[in-house]
Image (cartoon, rainbow, N blue to C red; front, side, top):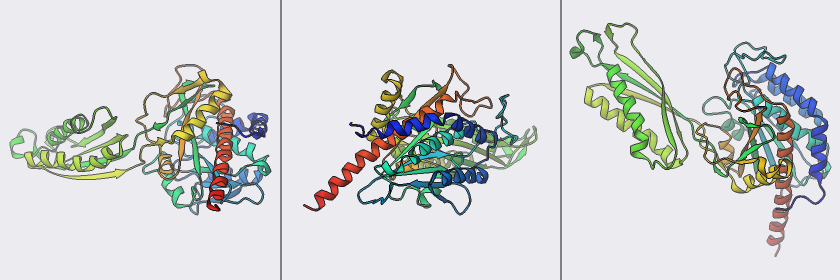
Length: 415
């Protein structure tokens, strides 16, 4: 795969490196001022102000959370010139930070424990580099700063409805990985993360005295039978060579030791890689719960909430990440991820519609590091400029290649 001949990426990356300290300061600002999902008003405004200063055309959602911003070369023509989008999530988690650092969260009980502060600064660094050379760009760069990644169904679906990927030819993303040392990235074509769905069962029986269970329909007993059946569902209904996992997170029933409760609830998550497996799950839940409840004379209600689908990384875009990572970091520092993560990520909503891929950015200064969603999560901030450069070079590579393809297609239309 040939790089653009004019070495534009070198000049873009040089500007990123010249502003490393500014990017670290920006990351620390976001880390100290985290906002929960759907409450990212100040974060969105700060990003909008910075991007307008760089010359971006900024589009903020009417709700005030989430935006996309474009920078284009003069006389941009979408028929001949492509658009590549780069996405960052912006929300934080309801976690009390335990780090003793100057940029510790000032919003008590809220923390950027998943690295979205890093994502924001990294994508901004890419945008900063591009803005300095907009007249030389072979197409349009779009930055997507997305709200509410941490909640179901995910803010990406709102951004799609807002038009964030209209006329976009490819979308790029990244995620912090505290299990990779700084200076390394992780890549994987195809399945990258799992879908994420939630379920809640309400089991209704007949309450009564704990000494007389024969007079009752014990909702807790029925719930335990259902839990056991749920854990068997995957291994006895799906091809076990394809990952899927059901986890029960809560069982709640009763409030007094000597009373059999009328009602018990079960909540949990379902994660699948294969879309067919995902589509079968809800029917299987009804079938299993219906059979168990009928056996014991109970009733049930199922609330099933579909979250983000699985990410399936586009092979071509992943190849670009791989090549660029090898160029910038050395081939030995590009880790080929052997198995998909069973975690969820709503970046998948973009990849369902256009070619896209995500890579993992090494952020650990020593191994092992504190995991994501830990109250002690922090990063080696050298990772920010590394991620910015990889995104910048990858985006320029895709713009260059897609521009050639579009021009060739237009020429063929004229034959």
